[in-house]
Each structure stands twice: as structure tokens, then as C-alpha cells.
Image (cartoon, rainbow, N blue to C red):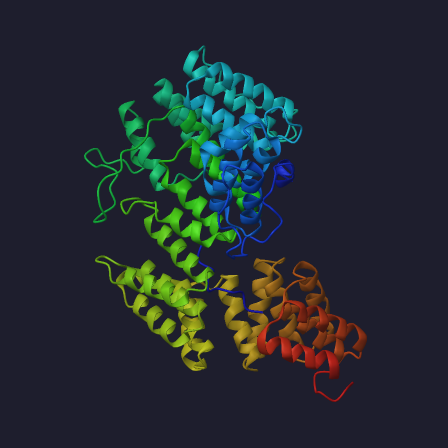
Length: 557
């Protein structure tokens, strides 16, 4: 099968957060008018009910307003605080989250991330005694114990004597702490004025694969320069006479001061980015929000909050959050992609296209803006316009050698029924990146679907599966190619493995059913088709239903 290359524009450790309270089980995508506030009249029960209705509707901003009113009328209610805390975190209401966390401190179901919120508050108030108490609480709680050494160490940076973070080897999550150790040491030594030590920690962190965003680099580089570490400052992009200002996009951004709460923000942000590689769920969104509470000026963190909101189905909030990123920030264009995606998620396809098209009309617009417009057109099945847009992007000098752009350009005319044009573009993509499994798979699968160059397609797909042996899309493509070549025995194990890895993929299950049917295993084939029909839609769902009922040729009841 072809992997979806038109992006839905944004875009062991998870068990550690298993006890973090999650969002209400009601769908975040549900949107109705039930959560309107009326007739509250200071009645905590009425406000609580309205909060629950808004929460069930996936309306965190409205639910937090109701829970805030309920707590104002009944300020000792743990049940209200428990619901209010989680909704406040989602909505970015730090005041309500703090009020709820303080009230829940002695509750047995106290959420683990609330300790981090209290720690942020303690650092912000320069209360290092409370920060140390909270570090002890993290150890006692166990779920986030590996963060305690960093909390204690930052407290010592302020009131001395300095005690560097030490990762206990017997901590079951010590590996996660070690991933952030050098990064935190670098920040602490910058605060302490130890330029050489900070440089050593920076280079060690870089060797471990730590990435420094443009906005974070703009904060670190001047401090390294102040401490005489010019080479490290230059590595972070420092130019002595420059300020943090995006070319042609507004006023400069004043970098924040590096201090304990800033260090905690960096730690939480990095930790959450690691977590988000396994998917964006409620714990990930919560931790991104906490990082943003710690450093509200960070545009990199705000962008990730917006992306997490979009992934969680909170399109309106994602649009608004991304809109808070100033035009001078390095993340501004990424934020525009989130806003376009948010409009598309809310089924405002025409508005999303108009927004993206306006970006291409801005002075200095480049390949990224045209790619974004092409993506949203492709996502909306406007294939002809998408092809024209990708062609316009490829005409720009900076697009030379962009294999991914050629692949996207190739996809659009193929979907529009212009196979020869699309194939030519995909061949260009492959020539630029002959070892890309994504390009190999897309071109080869397109050939197989049209019955062209099947031996060549099989060779390409064999190469793709060697490069990415566990990718179900590639296994499915190779299995389907074998089947179309009359080699069903080779196809079956590949398709079975692909279905086991991606049981919800309709195309893969349908292919498996076709192969099983060809081998006379009709009961199993119908079972596979039935599974394929669960997630199918439109014409595909109708086709699978016909197969399930009467077989592939419509003559076998």
C-alpha cells in the first residue's frame, strides 16, 4: 500500500505516567451547544454540572470557566478540583490548575504532574525550601522520581552550595534521566558563570543527539559569548552584532533569563518530545502545557502545545495557540501549518486553502509556503490544483534536489488520473534518493496497481523492506506485488505479518482476503474482508461488502 504522504498538517516510559489523570472519555471531537452557561447563580452544583457537560463535549475553555465558578462557591470541594485540574491543564489555565493542585495535595489520587506544577510555582517564587520538599515528594511518589535530582540541583544553584545532579543507578528510569543530564548541567553552569564547563556539557549533549531549536539557541548563544566561549556561541548561530530577529518578519524577541524555572521548562519540554514519539495523548499534552507554564515565552514549546492540541482534536484551541507565536519567531511558519491543519480539522477546507494560499502571497514566500498549500489541496482531493502548486514550488531555485517535493508532485497528477505525468515526477524523486523506502514504495506500488513493470516493482519493494523491515505498508506492497505476479505463496506470509502489525489498515486486510480467497481459504478470506470493512469508507466499503457477500467476482455466495 502507499503510505499517506499528504500530511495531516500539524504534525516503557508512557507507563510511568499511567496514573496521570486523563481527559474525560468523551470524544474531544464532539462539538455541540450543550455546554452554554446559563442560570448558574452562584450554585456550585449547577456550575459543576455545566462543567461536566462542557467537558463531555470536548470544550475545555468552557468547562474551566464552569469549574472556576463552582470552586469559587465551594472552595474545598476535591471532586470539583479533580475535574477542574485536568481541564485547566488542557485549556492552559494555570491559575485554576494551581488552585486545584493545592486543594488536591493530600488526595490519594493526586496526579503526578501536579507535583511538577507546584515545583514550577516554587521556582517561580524563588522558594527553594519548598522546591526541595517537592523533590522529596517526587521520590516518594515514585512515578517521576528521576526528576528529583534535577529539582534539588537547581535549588542548590540558587542558595548553594552547588550540588550537581547525580543519576542513581538503581532508579528504574535512570536511562531517561541520563538523556537529560548533560543538557541540564550545561544550563546550570551557564547560570553559575562556568563557561568552560558549560561548553563541555554542550558538546557532550550534542554528541548524544540533543537538538537545540533556533529559539533556544538564540537564548544560549549570547550567554556563551559573555563567558568567553566564542566557538560554542558560533556553533549555536551567534553573530555578535545580531539580535534574535527573523529576516523581514517583525521586531526582535527579547530572550528570557536562564534560571531554575527556565531549566525545568527545557527539561519538561525535552522529556515530552521524547514521549510524543509514541503518539500524542493526554499525558503528553499535559506535560507540554506544564513546560509552557514554566516558560511562557518559549515559542518552541508553544508550537508543540498547539500541535498536541491539534492531535487531540482541539482544533479551535490549536488555531488560537499557534496564533500566539509572533511573526519574528523561527517557529512562525510551522505555527501557520498548525493553523491550516486546525481549519481543515474543523471541516473548513475552503478557509484552510485560502489561509495557505495567502501565505504564498507574502513577500519572501518560499518552497515551504507552496508545499503547505499543495499539501492542504492534496488533502482536500483538489489534485489538479495541488499538482500546479507543487510545480510552482519546484520552479523555485531553493527546491533543487528536493526529492520529497518531486514525490508529492508525482502523487497529485496520479490521483487526478494523469499517470504518465505523475510517474515522471516519481522517477525524478527516485533518481535523487534511490535508497528512500518511502519513494521506492510509492513508485513501485503505483506500478503494481497498473500492472506495469512488475519485476522491477518487486525488486524495488524488496529493497524498501530491507531498509525498513517492520513497516507494514512496505510488507503489504511487496506481498501484493507477489500476488499480482502469480506468487501467492510468497505473498501470504508478508500480508499476514503486515496485518498483525497494522490490524486497522483496511487496504492490507483486503489484500490478505484476496490472497486467501485465491488459495481456496474462503472462510478466512471473508473474515479478513470483514475486518477490512470496519475502517473502510465510501466506494471501498461498498466493494469490500460485495466481496464479503459474494466473493471477488460476485458469483460465489
